[in-house]
Length: 191
Image (cartoon, rainbow, N blue to C red):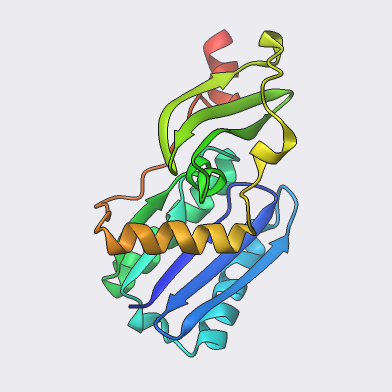
């Protein structure tokens, strides 16, 4: 089975190709606005490294959030387009699942900007409860290790995606996982 997985939800671009011959990956620090320019060239490179033609993909996966609103949309749109073009099945992964990968119990945290945090209680890699924590709440229960997976992001992404494919956890639609409204929506509501 050939599975292409991407994460565009943070300042790092992660692209992973899982084949029966192994995993091929690229991780690049792109900042807040480099995903759209580098995503498809990176996908092309990883497919070439793995010797897989895009038409031979059986599944595609995207990290659907939480994270950067624009990054989520870029990743979901790209993998939806590839799935539509190739007939590949879809796998949705959350940022929390990457952090919780290979951990029994963790309070996973994703930076929500401006001192805010998206947090989730996770047991055995699964989210049991999630919530948005505002900077005003002054929450201090999260340590820096809980912002990162216990291995590289590409290893965590490959592990989560492989497990979901093996258990048949496919979805019809890659839907963004937003835990709050975008800044533009919040500002519009204030008017």
